[in-house]
Image 1 (cartoon, helix red, strand yellow):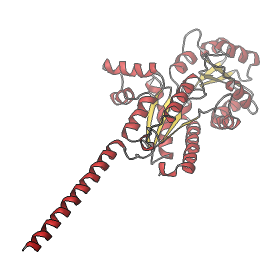
Image 2: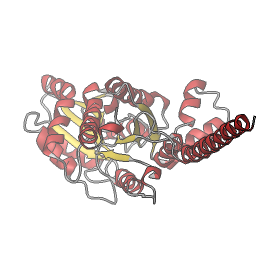
Image 3: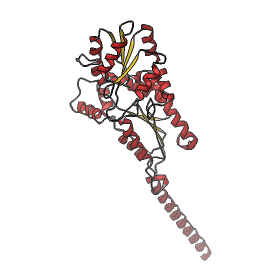
Image 4: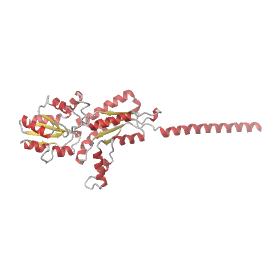
Length: 336
């Protein structure tokens, strides 16, 4: 009888020790999981300046569609770098926005700045995150974005597994960095070829308005113009916030005088937003269209941003492909 009791007691002790050990290990693992979120699928953040013009959103939508098609396994999100533009969308929503499509209003009121979008991704568990600038040049907006990404990418923790972003990389703007990468300029010429060929066929001048930057000298526009003129001599690039301004562009077109007396005018901007519709094609005395019309030219306006050109949207897709290949060779586990 005592032998049976001893064996029963040993079994009970064994079970108690087993369950206590299991409970301890499970609890420890549970605490670890509470702090170490498993990586989600890789993410792409498209960082655009943004626009307040509903009709111009088609330019951004086309880029998003091209990126989504090229990266079907990625979580793709849009962000606006402009504080002013996000504020306008919020104010419209607060006022009811009855004059706007309500689905569009809800969608774009919800667009956040890049930092907030990245915070959301990190909270949900970040894998590889590719941030693609949708800017044309590395102006002030791009530099601010680059400094943000650099700071977040370098953010370390004591435990490697708790690093906010295991992999965070930024894609360059369309015309590259600095004064323009020759490869990027060649891609831009190819992307603009439909407009260029049309102007050449019509013997018209092609005038394009970029944004420019009053704080940074961006000779990339002059380099792009020189590259374009190798094959299309009647191309004139100007900007809103830096030389050459509209009056200077109109004066030069008048001096060169295209044979047909025609001018095709289009934005050298991702979206045909407020600048394109007012500064370039508005009815005010100082708009580019008014200035060129005053010189006796027949002006044909194209209110379509670069983002609506598949060939331009694919510049950003290719930049993302380069980042993807770079991560795949270094940290393939983050993009599977």
